[in-house]
Image (cartoon, rainbow, N blue to C red; front, side):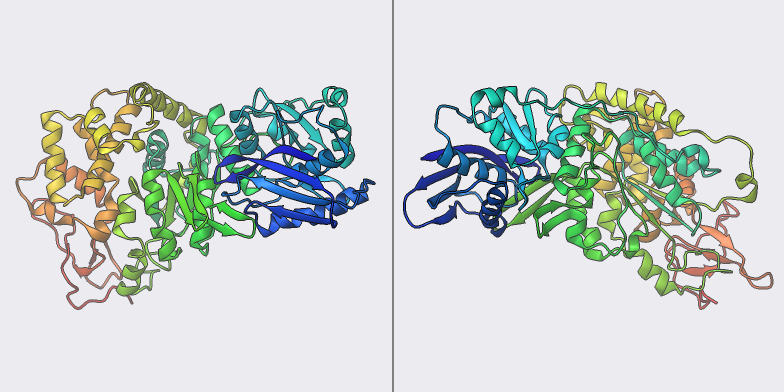
Length: 585
């Protein structure tokens, strides 16, 4: 007799329906499985035979042909064990008076007959609901996760004995006890808070702007200045998760097998901090022994991906982030198909100014100019252009460390972020695809970031002086829009643009504009102010009291310290080559 059982597999973030067809016939005893299946699916035949025997169910000597339809789609994983076992039992021992067509069966069989946990139950049950099924039979350990999908009749089975009880007759199936959703604590819980940070008001302000607009952030500073502390506290000021965001995060973690045991939902924004030795497939996603799995950038979706010591990551890994950062998704292409995962995360990165971490303090830093340049140039210009805010974190003074003044808390910052996000939600309500300012395209920027004549002239001068690319220009406008939202301003003013420009300083030091702009006597004072903030790292450092001062320039080259006649005290060396003095001891 032919039996048909509904099941489902996974492809990327989505499930797909599979019909398991089991045909029992006379002939030489043999089990055959077809339907474009992988080795792990072929092994399910052996698992099913042994599990049925150990559960006390004797299969008569029959020829069984098992087909997984549609046959043109690759099937992988252990999702189909329960459906195959159900099909075998139905084709041999049951009649067609009791139909199971409205229910899907998913689960892995152990040799002792127990039904084990499988990954990705949430997207699989979601697909079953979309396909019109009324319910699903899943491993008991996966039942709470499956109950997240509303409107589905979920039956959790622990072993083959439970399975036989529910499929033996209609009354048993109807009377089998259903799982009930457990009450799960939904409040977020963090062990860190921004009130722990002393000083660093400039960096905390940048973190606030990044969180409010969903912008990427790069923190650069000497070792021990607090870069990691700031980064780890950014999730505490992001808006609370909506149910849709929570379900999306839970889907990704369920597919990756990282959902905490006993949890139905994650209830907290992810914070992923991979080591700098991570491979490119592990960062963006790729093949594993269990199939295609999401990488760190997908696991950080709706949260924060923190890359500490960014220049130490491999060049290929960093450059692989270009497209996901722009498109908020990552596509993994293989011969058997394309797999799509979300990459809608905030990128927060940290780096030291040099390999030893003490530059530009020449009393501690012994790195040569070439070592510093090679270290910093590990981050390419295209990657820097995809980072909205580049902030230099200054060392904290002793008075700031010992200050009794309470710092602003994460709860206060979160209220500011939530207010700004509410304004953005109203602004983008008609667009549908936009959520935060960082998501705006060039066309959206023209619509939502309009400038008056004075502001347009101001940013136009800076555009020419700093030789901005169009991507950098758009990043500045997006950040300025977020700063205006934090202040509750409807229009973008010059002060908003000036602050936004000040967060592009690191890019200027490595690849762009220099302090030569200060020499222009007709420069607008506000433009010069923006450059002073942007080029914060230009400073004069005395190495020894009996030696001339050395100026640290934006290009990390050295010359004797000079001051412009118009702005005394501002050292200008620009792109001049070294005049013979070495930067190292």
